[in-house]
Length: 143
Image 1 (tube, rainbow, N blue to C red):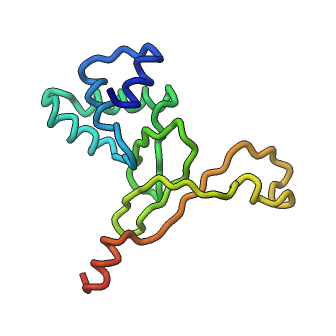
Image 2 (image 1 turned 135 degrees about the vertical axis):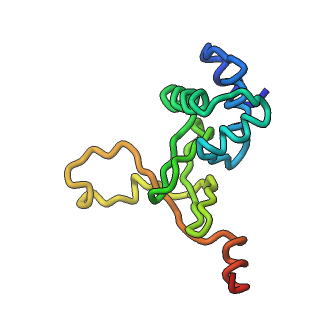
């Protein structure tokens, strides 16, 4: 059983066949699928699953805190099941590929007191941007 399915069972989330398929599609490392990608993959396993059902399941998973909604630079929202382990994201500015990264620094500690403007800072989100090897290779070939 996947880590996400185990967590959902532990929380008593009713696992209908549709919800199970959505959770199975989201399982894995570096998974950052859009809702449409989740629907397409889920439909391969369960052809009758509707886009609305997928969107509803994703919304519930986000509300439960079991999946993180990731928005990068105005692109489609992506859904990250790695909600239990602190991490940041590395995004390709070419194709939009997203990877989980685990920087060794502390983003909260790195913000100087004079730059906090009196805020009590509770968390920080850092997104690293670059070009993935595939896009870098394509650019090198003139594509």
